[in-house]
Image 1 (cartoon, rainbow, N blue to C red):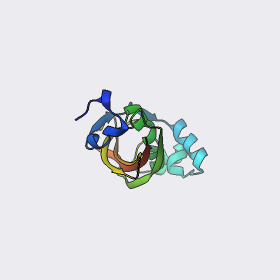
Image 2 (cartoon, one colour; image 1 turned 45 degrees about the vertical axis):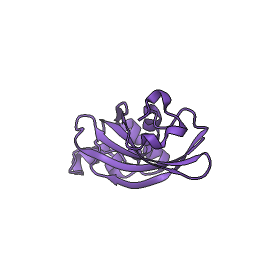
Image 3 (tube, rainbow, N blue to C red; image 1 turned 90 degrees about the vertical axis):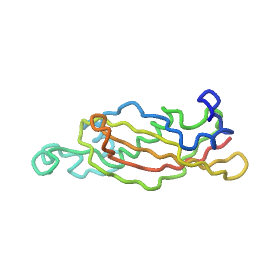
Image 4 (spheres, helix red, strand yellow; image 1 turned 30 degrees about the vertical axis):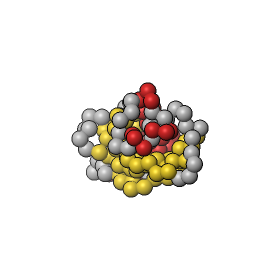
Length: 156
């Protein structure tokens, strides 16, 4: 297997199965949740109404949007160096097999583990890269809150 120092587009296939590790923790506090709600228009009370969620939710408070957790994947992938530095471009190609397995309470810190699952050649200098992304609360690393496969087109 190649080392990180020789990780290039040409060695993508050799990295299939590689665990790139875990991203830095990201705190999903109420301010971040509210900002996400403002951007998306998803103002469901379970996410943004702290008083009602404390009173009416079986979880005892607000929770982060599942899509907020999903949206944090690209930053984690770039932080962990999932894509070779000699790539001319990396284009989001989509998501597959997205599962939200547990709610994330407001204030919880999450981290995302990224593994390179598959690389498919899509023509000269183009590779479809599938990564498996597993998010979990930092204080409960044995219980994933989300698992999602991402697809990216890596251009040499």
